[in-house]
Image (cartoon, rainbow over all chains, first blue to last red; front, side, top):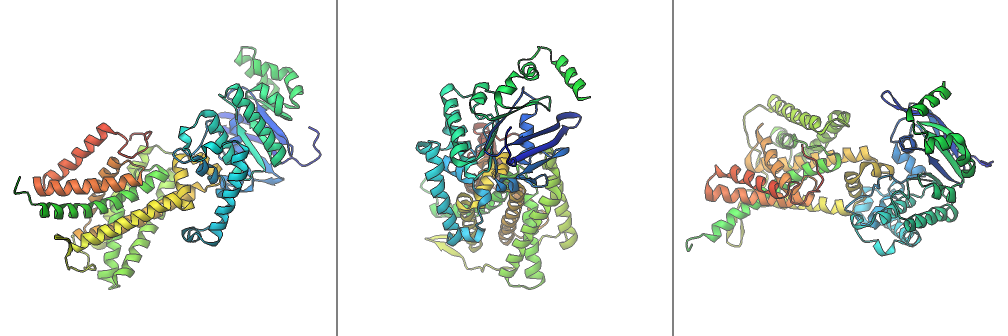
Length: 273
Length: 295
């Protein structure tokens, strides 16, 4: 990491436990401004738990999460969303039964200031906000993600790849400063994966949004990420540029496995002690 | 069949429609809560009863004009909804659906007890505030109370349907109903949506209570009306407002026809028969979401 700028997101000493099960143990990393940072690690390493701590669904046992230098620990999820933290989910979480356009517009919810009275009258602020939203959503996000042809379709009727794209569109409507993608290409074919990679890079470059993603597809990670954090059994075992990380023997062992999970566990416990 | 009295049939049907509209309004309160919080609230009939008794206190007790008493009853209903949500339902968050369901049954008993302590167990009637002059639709006679009840219930349901479709809070509620996690991460204040649903449900229930009380009088037993409403929402689908509307009208009509042509003792038989048939064909109700879990 060569950033002299302050990182947009910092995680310091994060620990999380469910009862006696330690999910995260003293996890620290930083997401440099304007980067694509990837969190990788075997299944159950705690990657999604980190996301859930950052978006405020889980209360960590210890540690701090700093967003642009501010400790966001006490904020509930809507407040974090309003600050500019947007995310997608591993198992697509769209509002079924609503159209693509409605789903995307809901992303803007946190930024709307219209009260019930305004909305009922549909005057003034309600009208202005709605118009502004429509323009931005239609001209920018929908065109950008090439989903114009499905805008009025119910999301339930869409293919998996398109749903992922709609979820990305909804996150973009949240005017994010940092976009957290939980396995953006999981279950996608090669063509869909390449499309998604292109969108992620464009979001970073054209929109100036920092990306934090969890992903298993090593090819994608090598191609588009600037910074990689490797997690195993709830601990950070390596961090750095993609090429450095993949050369790290610990990472190779954790990822490819020695075949003996217990041996690995013992080893990590030894290291922690 | 030369002797079939079509005029009488029309009158019976109109009365059924009126009763159905009240069922639909109660069903709406039920659906609002279920949709937002996934709580099956068996105390909805008792919340309705509280609304009716508050109205009774303010008119017969304090001598306020009916519109002021109505506002007070609606406000009390909303307040009751808010208090129940914050004090009883919110702490149960994450508990099994069965536990929350049992808590609402207990809540119903507590509310009945409160009414008996405060107002006594004897049935009484609400002061007449709708007038008595009968209404004729064409040649058919309908009771004025039923016409008013129908009009009010239909208007309220229409407002809710429109608000759900277009008002941002309604859209937020629908979003919360489909996926709480996603809604939360989109900046929707999910706990506030829970409160809002209970408040609106409380208001709708209190309004239904005043109408039901005006038609049939009030008593600590009037909460059983909530059971018919439960049939309505199960028939219509637990999470569908349109389902509550159509289910309400369907049950209202069928009860009226069965009560008139087969005799009063067949009313419940046909209602629950309808319930059984619907459950066999569409276990999630006529308009319900397919993946509703069973209790």
